[in-house]
Amino acid sequence: MNIFKRLFKIGQAEAHAAVDKMEDPIKLTQQGIRDMKEDLAKSMEALAQVKALAIRAKNDMEESQSKAEDYKNKAVLILKKASRGELDIAEADRLAKEALVKKEESLKQVERLQKEAQKFEESANQLNTTIQTIKSNISKWENELKTLTARVKVSKATKNLNKQMAEIDSSSTVSMLERMKDKVAQDEALADAYGNMANESKSIDDELNKIVDTSEANAEDDLEKLKAQLGLSEDGTNPSKEE
Image (cartoon, rainbow, N blue to C red):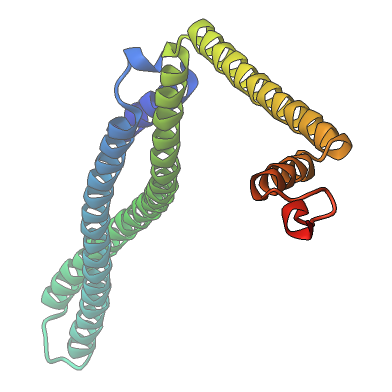
């Protein structure tokens, strides 16, 4: 059957490493499922036809069985009429014999139809087994298709990501990062240097101001100058007014 060829190809798609040289596994699986569904439809149609033949064979068998009984009854009735003198004995024997011959033909027909009906039943059972197998395979491969589709998506995403990572120049990236680290370290060292210089300058000014209060010295000088301008003595009196 075509289905087994298709299933074999699907098995190849999973087993072979060189998938790129084969058909798309998803399209292949989808085609396999479509083929199985077509085979299922054909098997269902064949099963219906075989069952119809089996039913007809049974009906014909029952009809032939009925005819055999009828011919037997007719032979009995003919012989009874002859025994009562209603029919010539020779004629009765001839007709009864003909009826019995027809009865045997009908019985042979019953036997033949019984065998045919049995064969049709066996064929129907085999077709039914095939149908159940196809249904099971369709369900299996539809689930496989869902899994395969998800795997293909993940595989493509992973492949693209790995490709992008592979295309990155790792040496230039590392070099750029090292330069950035050196620049940051240099800026941090420069900032520390400026901070140290500011602290050193501030500390010297604090020490000098602590020893020498320039503001007080300047005020003392300004006071002496002001007294001189006013003609005051060191104790604040005016000598000219005292005379």
